[in-house]
Each structure stands twice: as structure tokens, then as C-alpha cells.
Image 1 (tube, rainbow, N blue to C red):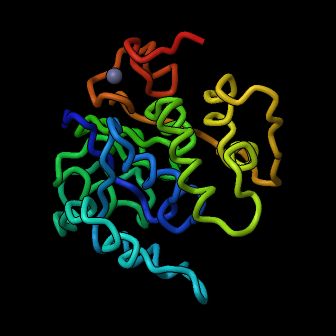
Image 2 (image 1 turned 90 degrees about the vertical axis):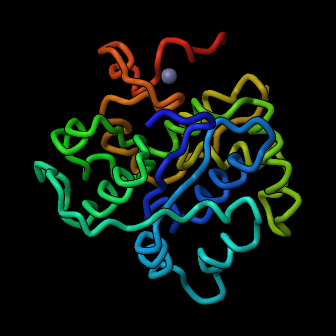
Image 3 (image 1 turned 135 degrees about the horizontal axis):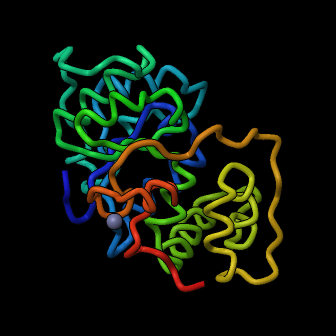
Length: 228
Ligand SMILES: [Zn+2]
């Protein structure tokens, strides 16, 4: 379950959130990115069920970029040996990730993933805010925001404006990148903060097994701590 760059399984709730999805996919596209996103056809169908009106469907986004040819992994019909404390609506995510030997699931519903189910195959579930705050470098983050700014006709469409907007749903990412944008104040949103941002036993940056300290740091192994 260790790969370099790290393969992560992206849950439907992340793919269905346009701003978070764009941050995640564009970060993965950056040179030297530390991760590769993966998902399954079933997850893509679930995400598409939230697409409204003129919004783009996930498959169209996937087909836009050649590098995303590798994104889809197989769904698994193996009911397997999961102890079963994961929300029934998310068990297929764990099964597909496990079958593809992917140890980290990026999801906005970490609390839906059972501790026992994650422990059996030694996996982790992580909120996209926590994940991006640690996997993305400041240079990659700035470059991602430049791309997003250029693609947007309406505000926020500057790098600083987008960074401020990131704070709304992604307070950890905003804080992690704050020193790269001195003077930019966060735009707070009405979003309630995630109940939990990490469960499991795999490092969210390199995929290795974590010790208790790494688990306590929200899935971040000692090697990845940043100099402020
Ligand atoms: Zn690590």
C-alpha cells in the first residue's frame, strides 16, 4: 500500500464539491506532486448524481486530462472480511480502495469509516482539508491557485482572493500556506468544521504505518513536519 507518489482513493463527496475537487485535482497535476487521485466507476456515478444544471460531469473532467487515464480503479463486489462498522453507504469505497491496494481514502465523512474496518487492512480515512494541508508544497499550492484564478471569470479570481476563500472550507490548508501569503485575511464561511479529520493507521503523506504520535497528529508521520 506504499507508492510514490502516494495513490489515494477519492470519495464521491469530495468529487461532488467543485471547489475542493478542483484544488485536489489541480494539485495532483502539479510537477512533483506527492499524490495520485484514484476512484471507481461507482464513486463517479455517486458524485455525478449531485451534479446540477450546467455543471460538468466527473467523467468529462477525467477525460479532459490525459494523465487521468489511470484514475479509475475497479469496484469490488467482494463483501470480504470487513468487521462492518463503516456506514453501509461507504463500504464500497473501502472495498474498492483495498482491492486496488490503496491505503488512504480522502473523504469529507471520516466519521463514516469504522475504526475496526480501517484497522483490519491498515488503512486511513482523511478529510481533504487535512490531506491537502500536508501533501501540497507551498509552491504547488501557489501554482494551483494561479491556474484556478486564470480559469475563473468571476471573483475570487486572483491568487490572494482564492487563498482567502480557501479558508472557508479548508482552514487547515489556509493556515499551512499562510506564510506564503502575508497579509491575506481568511474569508470565513458558514460551513461547520468537520467532526473528525483523520482515522486509521497509515501516514497521509507517504502511506507508511504510523506510530501513536503520527496518529495523534492527524495522520502525519514525523518525517513530514514542516519548518514554520
Ligand atoms: Zn509518512
